[in-house]
Length: 74
Image (cartoon, rainbow, N blue to C red; front, top):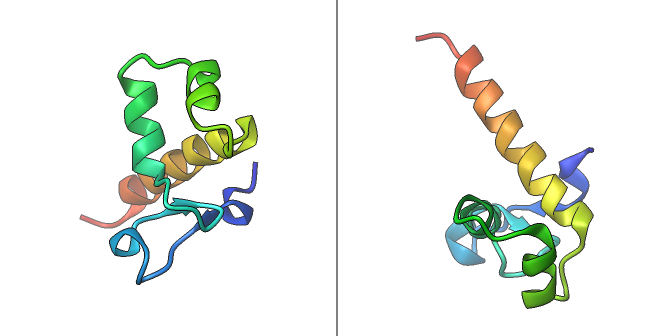
């Protein structure tokens, strides 16, 4: 999954937070829903503009960010 096709960062939107396809839904929002035990199906029902690939892109973005944090010199 190449999340860069779906995750956008625009300085004037949501304070420059990573969003999904230019919408106002942030990666953080989706990760928070998943962490609170909301199922993918429930998220898609509540936000019909999202796709399963959008949610996968959020997870890939978070994994890549974590990997980059761990590989930075201390």
